[in-house]
Image (cartoon, rainbow, N blue to C red):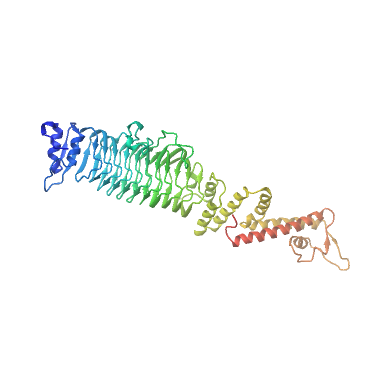
Length: 502
């Protein structure tokens, strides 16, 4: 664009034109500035002044038209404060210095595939029709703290973006790379955040942000049935750390499937609500997951994730929790083993052995062998409910007698009860002596004990024969002795081989 004569410029434009070579601030005091004039300055229509850093630094201006800097290579900075730009700011495929639009009103902001060498700042701004940062690269920080961003309407999407935009998302930033921190504190959106494959090398911080997902189209997602609002979709995102706590609110699903978090992923104090699934964190790797939201409505999916430290409250989960395949090194929270077992029972997929074995392995690592045995006993009881009735009956018998081997003291209790019963009965109804050629003294306790032992030790069975109905009791004691011995052998095998079959 050629340099325009001064008499073609408004008063605000004339002052901006004069200030550009030195990068001085211009307060437009509500004056009108055409976007084409700003573009002309940034694209080199005004000669630079040696010894100064040129730039557009403008406040309180009404900027008309679209600011189109697509495909440009800009050496001057753009810094707008308290300005109104009802049109589109486009930096698609551009390479620029720092871009700052603070407390501005913008129609739409597009910087797809752009490279920003420095700071990209939209703090406090209002963007009416969405922000696009797909595959952009920001070498400094990304700041959107206090911004208010709404999802674009379908009618404003240009033909060149057909099929690549969605009215569901206020921020479309798949493949975004930010080398510094990304600060979204106090951000408010009407529409979700699409961060698929994004890389936040300095971390992502969204304390007190309010993300309201919207579902404007009846899409069907293979991983999300039924369709519902999506607050954040960040599959395969990587970050040094992610802060979704301290007042963070998400209305809709927060999905980080396959994300890689090198530090802490925190939902401490967050409010998470969704009609069906509020958190989808499957196939994720994270050093520490803090899952202690202040409010949570909807199911949680942690399946097949690998977590170093899981800090949560197992008693606070309100709905279904997918846990199959989840691996963690440590659990930190106020819940006891009973709460953990109730949590395992909430998996909508039904019985799976892995969650029980993982929890038992954790308790064993920290030296809580009793809790580990309790978890493994619960695993076998849950498994029994999936078997056919003959296996259920035998399993129930083994459970009652010795607790599947994890409660061998039960066999002692049964043995004492049977021994006491037999001693009392045979003491009252003395059996007949079989061999009369020798004199024997009958002892009811020794006789009952000999019946209970699978192999006769005291030679009492062959010397005395029960009379009347006590014959049935003798047979019951012999059968019970074999059952108890079998249960103890099976239980001993399981004790020596912790975990048992699944």
